[in-house]
Image 1 (spheres, rainbow, N blue to C red):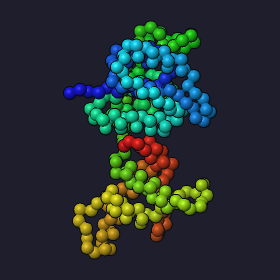
Image 2 (tube, one colour):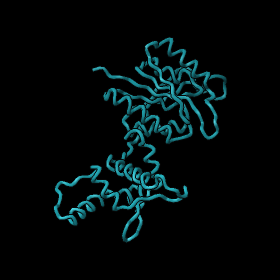
Image 3 (tube, rainbow, N blue to C red):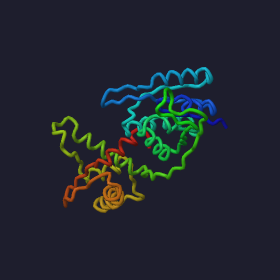
Image 4 (tube, rainbow, N blue to C red):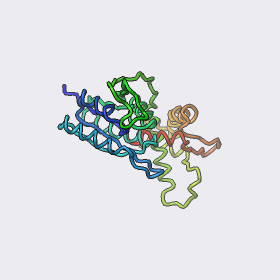
Amino acid sequence: MFIKQVHIIFNSRETHRITEPLLNHPPNILYYFTAFIRETGQKDENMDYLEKNLNLLNDNLPQLEIIQKEVDYTDYIEVMQELSKIIKKERQENQNCKIYINVGSGSKVTAIASVEASELWNCDIYYVYSTKYDPKGKGPEHKGKMIIKEPLTFPIKKPKKIYIDILRLIEKMITERYKNKEYDDSINKYIYKKHLVERLYTEKIMTLKSKNEDERKLQASKYMKSKKYLNRLNSELDYINVSKDKRNKKIFITDTGKEILNIFKYYF
């Protein structure tokens, strides 16, 4: 069976360190990122290396499809989102495709995000170094023979899909609750737990094996089943915060929960 190969690289002051793995193991599609630092408005300072690398690849691999993209090299969440969009798109087109990410180019943030994306979404990473490292000389920092390594990484425990689905529903309900309302942006937005429990079942994120005809017992069953998930989201994962009110408990999304929503915004 044909196995599609996809490579993802980040531009930097390098030539062979970027191109040699591609020439030796030609992919079908290459995603080539360049830098843009949004906070300062700074554009990629190594566009001349981009041009050199693209010319070399086009001359030697004329059939290679190259897709250029831009990402903030200092924004971990944005890098994760961009990687997730690529991985989701390619897996939807070919679920057996092999996706490789070069973690030796770009910035430290793109490297960290790439390693974690590879663990979350089952990709392969590789690191390229050389027999002659020359950071103070002219031209690329790595010269001589290029050596490719596949680093051993420890697995990352990805949250179960149902926890992300619940978190997304909470975010959706908060948006609905505050839509077209005037409020101070600094307030901590929330929804009521009783409303969330009901929506978990109307939107079929949770289901009951059997429905009790007694309305009070039915509500109790819904609360009991949803309780273990909400407790874990609150106490163990720290994605949400449940108020200590005796009645009409409020649910807030924590800063950690907001980061998780951003990381998994495009792909679980």
